Length: 561
Image 1 (cartoon, rainbow, N blue to C red):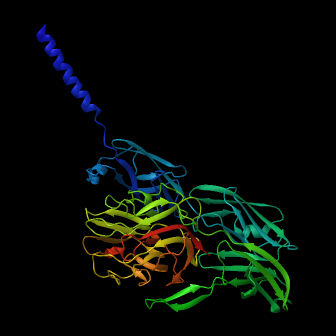
Image 2 (cartoon, rainbow, N blue to C red; image 1 turned 120 degrees about the vertical axis):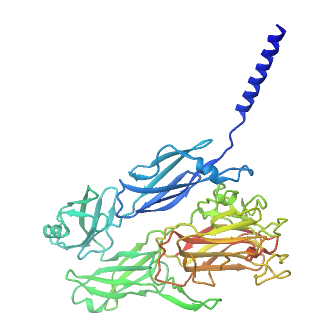
Image 3 (cartoon, rainbow, N blue to C red; image 1 turned 180 degrees about the vertical axis):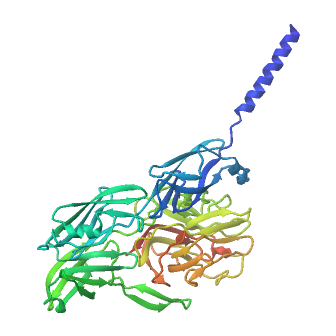
């Protein structure tokens, strides 16, 4: 019996040991989609917080047959011993194949699995330029893509039975057919609503077209907010036309601005063009730059007064509010979960910082008098033992470590520009001291000099992010958008910059506008990365030159139009 008791005890111990082994938890490895490759689309955004990938389809892409060639992955773990990320990536399993053709009229759901499961969603949007215009039209067409209706307006007294359609585009260019055609619609008139079938990719959409009378006699018919241009229309008689002038001004200003007089068509419609005006100068680096004159041209979010003058007397007036412009993502810094406030910046959605295991508080969520809302960003310099200086920083891009002693910033994020700004507004409060660290040569200031903090913004047209590496070795990739019109990644279209060489007076944030200097007034960003915003407590922190006690609060990044 004693023998059996010993055997039983040994078995129990073995069982207990086995249970202990099975209870050892799996490592927590967060699985992420890092990119989607294919044809007929661009990746417009990847949200790590929401585990969502947004695709923007080209106009001609068939949304029912979107070709995805490859999906790439990334991983994140808080365990500093787990450095072999490629090994983890190679083990990721997906709940469905992620290459082939997909119908993206509905979201594409996929589960990424390793030690844990992570639900990701791929969604698509497909912007299509649509137009319906008629001869003698006053003002802009109202198009409701969801209800599939389009309404154009003409002056009172216009014969609705004799309307000529000048442009009809309700689907992708070149591949859409219409029944009836624009010519057939014109032949029948618009005394009642008209139906038109727009067919593309084998599907047909039925649209309802209206032409209605309006009391307006002078109005904006179209605007291009990137080029700051517009077309104003008014009805004038043949006798009035030689002495007719259209003027405009921003509501609340005194001076009326002239337009470029156009032709009067057979319907009596008189057109005038609104164009921007630029000033010419040379920046501190000797490069020629241009700035917008904000009273000339058309700008997002502004309300304009219009008037028609005949023989110097105003005969018609109206007002028009231009659609709002673009928003800087999380420019109000209200979200405490932004990547820039953590050490997880390798896949930052927009804002990133250099926070890492050696310098954990280069960018944190904070509060300061004068901020908008309840939160702002606090940038705080530190003095890590090995490199001597880590400037507090915040930027649009990503950050990661390359080895133990080198930090890498890759500047640039995707951004969809619908309107051209004239500047960027930001609030800040800075404490800037004397340079007490100078590790590398190349900076224009040295130990004992007054340090400078910096904020800059750039509109770029890049096909890749711009990489800057710094640490124990000399920095590589350093750049200044005010000193060059291009990098290896592509054009710099415009930039604005502020050097802060003294501490901010008082205990409240200061609001300032950085005017945008344009190197190229014709270019429009088409590359993968099109925006850079950077804030640093030491302008030359890449060289490890600066003051280790500098701080800067920043908040409320906003475009000025």
